[in-house]
Length: 102
Image (cartoon, rainbow, N blue to C red):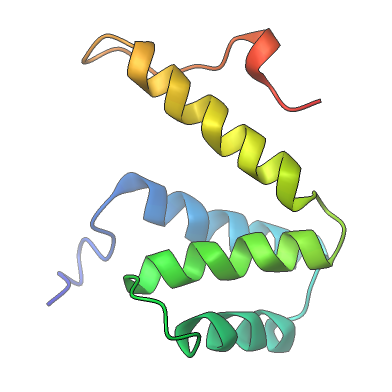
């Protein structure tokens, strides 16, 4: 059960939640579009956590709306994974300029 004082198990979940709210507030999609995208992911039959579905829905909606492409999202995700792998424990993870998506 989720602790009401700490609704997110991992920082990335809070970040995905905040990004979704921000993109909605900027007018990139409606809440009905968001609900449809999330529902599609939840009912997709894939074995993910709730926020795994949330992230997949956000990525799909970002690509569908032309905010970014699926390839750009995949490239950026890979760049962050590589940055995390080379960052010493306890240090902030940052992307070098050459690792960023064009």
